[in-house]
Length: 256
Ligand code: NDP
Ligand code: 8X3
Image 1 (spheres, protein in one colour):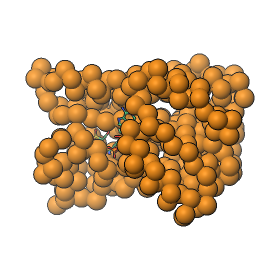
Image 2 (spheres, protein in one colour):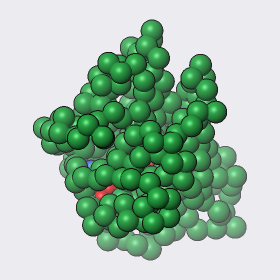
Image 3 (cartoon, protein in one colour):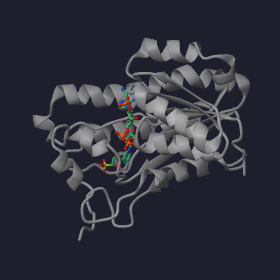
């Protein structure tokens, strides 16, 4: 197993859900945590928790991954202590709506594509050259079961997660011959703010997503992420699909 002690781990979308759980899980291993999201108040609170609970140092900044110039500026402006990113967790992402494609809202499409695909690309493009130069690094993309199976109304969200899959595979090919690793962790239903973001203003519908079965907790996913990153250097966990026991596929969830 590789020790994560004092390694710089950069997590996008650390203000909530899976990203937040990843920050805690890596901090538990003694890593130095670099966090970005738009809700700075949340990151500030989490940074204080990480220090109090695990005695590690963390650094956070406000970032909208859709803003290409801001991503470039933020990564280029990191202090020497934080610029040596060893693990990048590309987690920031969201879904909007569950409309049939021919009835879909174009703004929703733009937001999902800009965040889940272009945002992931901007962050990767800014961070990976440093990893290549240093000859060390691991990129862990958070995909989804939605990147394996399309479900009704999932159209564009699923397309973004299929894109994440293609980008993980493409990156692995392009980094061949370097010591860098590329993993993808693809969860099924995880109870986070995800559904509340998908159905803004409809809390009842959002909550229903998780009714009648035990969904994954963000920690379940974070454990898989940490597992990928702690394998010996010759091991690359390419892909992990992690689902609730009650979820057999994107479309079949046993609810009682
Ligand atoms: P949450 O809504 O709880 O968290 C999403 C995180 O992404 C937040 O921290 C949010 O931060 C951040 N984020 C969203 N848009 C941006 C942006 N433009 N710039 C920077 N950060 C952004 O959802 P999850 O934890 O569930 O989602 C995390 C990832 O997991 C996503 O990629 C999602 O697609 C994926 N996933 C989720 C599953 C689930 O069932 N929950 C299953 C499979 C995959 P802020 O708003 O503060 O910017
Ligand atoms: C999130 C899981 O099934 O709601 O990626 O799309 S699902």
